Length: 389
Image (cartoon, rainbow, N blue to C red; front, side, top):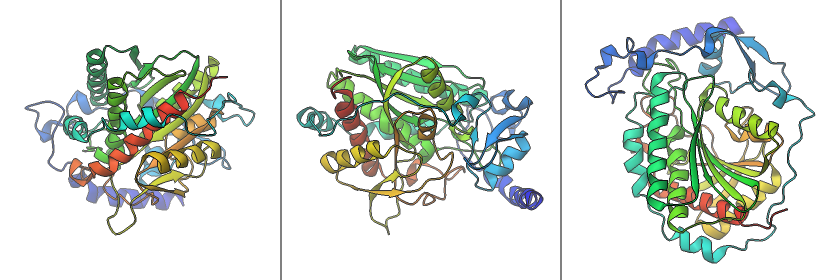
């Protein structure tokens, strides 16, 4: 079976090489596409100098794999978690913080006033330069620079608001750091709203073109717009609210596993995580909905998200199964914390442009994305201002 997969992957890769170098912006002004493969910007780092411990299911034992074997998994559409540096999270005895979620919504006036400040303007302003990076591959200089650029946008936003917010980068074993914006609350409990910032080309991960507008530029700006209006409304939560932009999701949930492990090891009281991975694409022939991942998530958090969607957005929610290692919500779930994930539709494979040069801003519906920013704002208010333990 493995030989067959390798053969198929190699045949497909031959036809994909030209496509992966389709015209598009590059990492530096004046850099030609013929120079991409030679540039240090696009060379892989040292993460894969040794084999990695890869898990593809709760029911299959993790295996040590080379980069070539991992590429075959990706090209075959197999989702996985790279648990090399977070093996203790995958101990069946793991338990997390027992948090309390609000049973009823109580922040309607404040939420609605803040929702009135939302706009689609920021989406394009950030996504155009963000997707202009040739790719945001997590173990490359280009991935590192795109993360630093994103952090600068967040820091500028916070500085203008003069808010009680700390912005920091979280370094990893690979080149791209994660970014965390912490809105300080009165309690040591933490509410996490998240997205991932990296992008990858399915066939040529470190130097193929991967604009990553939907996956996951859309989630990145969805929560960035939520942060903007929270700052503009002088949001002062009881619980601390953190917004996370993870590095290395495409490498097997690397950044989120590292942060979830750190928080667990330090005994941090994470109330719940709401993750946004892809919020901008939906088939116009299908109903416009908010997809909710039903597997490897917390049912009480999902129920709360359904209430928030009914109260504060114009869209219905529909549950669907996402599979093992689907996105970063799984890291928090694996660490024993509550988590949920909102998705652009109830069809996981609807957007066929992802992981390719065709995942562009032109394919996104900003008005659809706005409903997810509403959800992020509402989650921050209702969970962030719920009674603390």
